[in-house]
Length: 325
View 1 (tube, one colour):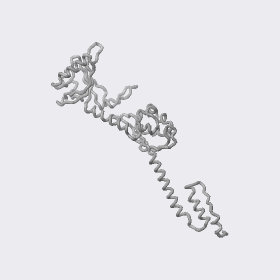
View 2 (cartoon, one colour):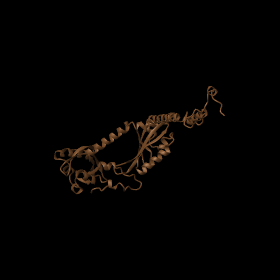
View 3 (cartoon, rainbow, N blue to C red):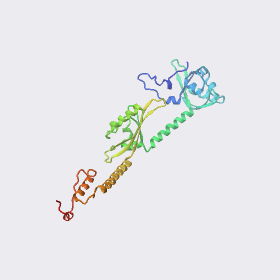
View 4 (cartoon, rainbow, N blue to C red):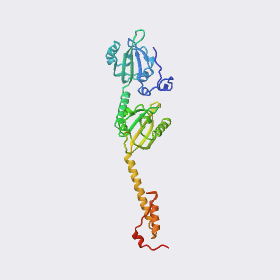
């Protein structure tokens, strides 16, 4: 058996028709594959194994794996573990210090299992990745999961068909729907109670196609459940890509800005009132003529406060008024 020239990051574009594209996660982990025969000699050495351990296929093939990869003080343990796997006692998984070609030691995470071919011959398959890189990825994933779950901002992830695949608890509360009623559905299907779902999907398709985020898009409406109070939200959309640039889908963040929106409305109303008062002080009372003053008052009121206005004048005012000729 020779080395395997499988598709790595550079072969991501050569997906066979009908097959899903490869995940970039395995490229990040750089998972190596090594096969040993029943005597513990290396029968297969993947290109990723060369990157991980430093030894080329020409260096490794046909040599005892223990002598190549294990320090002398670990030879007994390696022999014992190999015998357990080949004897059918079960797979073995764990971290093990491996000798690199440069003379150093790498802590490597292993998964080892027994294989049987059509002739009844036994082999041991080992898949491995750098322990430090694996732990870093685990920490990143754990941190991401906690941030999403505990974020005070509503967060969702949609696939390339714009169907929900993740909804955090905050967005469940904002939309008034549990995550189960989002997952697998489009925005139009899950949030049919909103008025602008077509506009939202159009914005998502634009971001998915161009990769240019749309930030702080304002929207308003009522949530699920017939709540009469209207809410306002600031919504942002941005495209998600893996380490190789392959588009994974779309992320959206939603912030409830109802209070600030209502405050802005009240501020705008107050400003209009102040402007109206300032305008009235300038326009009303420019003359002692009663008819002119009444017209000035009506002109200030319409159209700022009403579509039509009538000015009633007390009889006592009219009694002392000289007759107009």
